[in-house]
Amino acid sequence: MTKPSPNKLALKLPASLSALHQEAAQLAEILAQQENATRPWQHYLLQPTFAQFAAEQLGHPFDTPFRLAAALLARLDYEEEPGHSDARNTLQIPGLLAVPPQAITQAQALNKAKAEFQNLTTEIKAALAPRPTLERDRQLREMLADAGYPRAHLRQCYRQVLLCPEKPDALTLSWIKARKSIRKVTVDWCERKLVQLDAQGQDTGIQYQRQLLADLPGSRHQSLRQVQIQSRPNLQVAEIFRNDEEEQYRQVGYSAMPVLVHGGKDRLLPDFTRVDHNPPTSQRRTRRDLKIEKTPFLAALRVHLVSE
Image 1: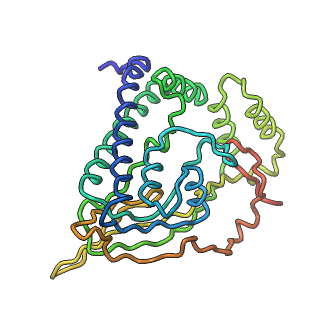
Image 2: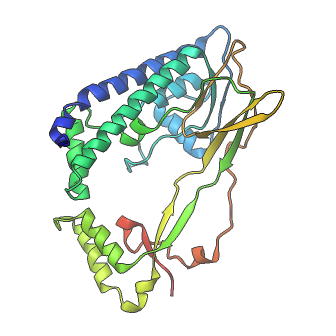
Image 3: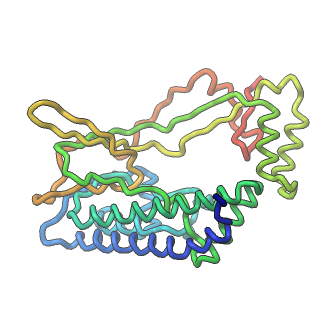
């Protein structure tokens, strides 16, 4: 069976993106309506530094939690963010919101639209696979622009809204610290990856890094390490359901956005653990961390050298 061409797949983008934005706007409207409800819905939003920054960018304070969450969930496009020029950054506000059933249903519809859009872009990328990475990304961006959404924020479009469709007996929250992985890489691996990033040899930054790699003395070839660091700590959320015989535990996920919890008739959150607004800091550094040079040797690959 012949696979669809990239251009044929791109014809599906306008409808997919339109549906995604429409579902997000409808969820935002439902959430915003809860702000002025006669009987308030319980909420618990944490305010670490990165969440405070997000609230400033969204233009809503923490004392209007439902409008704040609405603005976050509806933001599917890049916007100018002073101090955050890296477009890969996403705004994050962890926490919990008790919501009515219609908010749960609408969030499920939004999640479905998000998954369908992600599947479509995955198909497009697969169809463009023979092309170099930079060209493939550029072509996808051009397709999004042609579809009428030049500033679509892919990571924000993809990430699912976490839900508790049935009200649990309890919720457990805990901060999971930022994780770091360090792995040894070879000169050949680095060269191959750099070539994939710039197969046409037109990116001066990549070409400079290839030259750095070529000039690396043989005695340092064993010193290459790729360092990957998760940018922010995550708030882990899990549900607990109890009956007469057992207690069931289910992982909901990491709360980059408020988790929408079925509020039931009382409009309250279930029992939940409280955590500090700011994740705990760890001063512990392993011996191998101390040997890694702070400045990347090959920035495009996050590859550092081990100090001699």
